[in-house]
Image 1: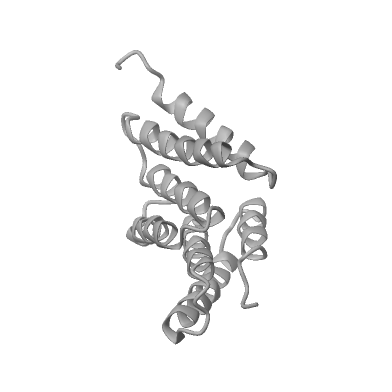
Image 2: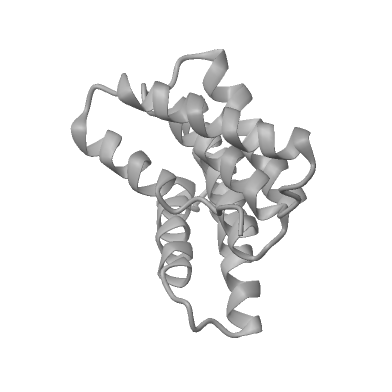
Length: 157
């Protein structure tokens, strides 16, 4: 596998995942392909020599987002928590923690257990912290991306 350009494969698969994420008319087979693409992107980024923590974290974010879209709350929460841990450890861009917390809030909301106090409090806490961290993001475009994601979080019915 030494001849593979893992970085390029990771990028291409990340973008291919978004091609499916952006559609609301996916078939079950396309949902499967979307999940496979997210994990394949994550895998290939992990094979890049000198991969940076933010690349690993963002791979977790993509897997979390796909699982959230598919309604897999536990898997979404797992990957979001991994991204939070990576972002809190530092050596990432200033918007990574906000994005990781957004993923955690989304995973909590997808769980749909809004009557369980700890779940609802977790969603609110993650969202509030994400908004606070997002306010400190230096690049306006990065801040807008995270704020747009926060605006699409699942809400109590």
